[in-house]
Length: 246
View 1 (cartoon, one colour):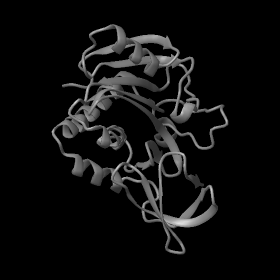
View 2: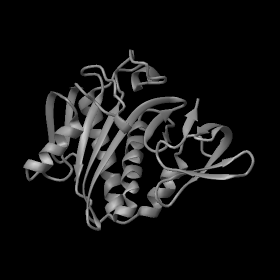
View 3: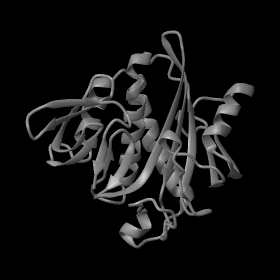
């Protein structure tokens, strides 16, 4: 087992990703180490967004990886593999979940998990990866202005043992990471695409040119989102270039 072979618990941290980065700098830390905390004082999502989590209710983790066989041009596949691992875990308890591009995890139209993947590139290698995951497990009330949070407890009405959930999540992520380092990039990309939220559904989107009606058709070679507009135009986006209108 790579992911989960070493687990470091901290009662609270400013950010598990920041702590992981410090460990990489100062220690000979083993690959697959998971840093977990009950509460983040400054939990971050993508592009600096704040991640809300009630103390001791959810899984807040960061995973340290050294995927040096991955070419920097393929680095988005790391995000794909981690996203699929979270979906594998959730499908132990619920029938369906989706990945809202690039790596938010959705159940119906609600967000149950978010990822923050930070890669360090040296030359032609991805030298290290920190995969931060916030996964809502037992929280039943959210106080921030986030529009659509949800948790496993809210969906199923059940309370979950966080230690058991962590072990299961580590197992599922480990399988996906081993699939990645074995070179099964095409399979990962195909599975990721099949899990995309709103795939082949006509919905509303907004970019710098304004709002339009379109459908997600595929994921580009480097992880871009490809949407066909109602008029037949093919639009390709990198992160934060398009908004999903709920």
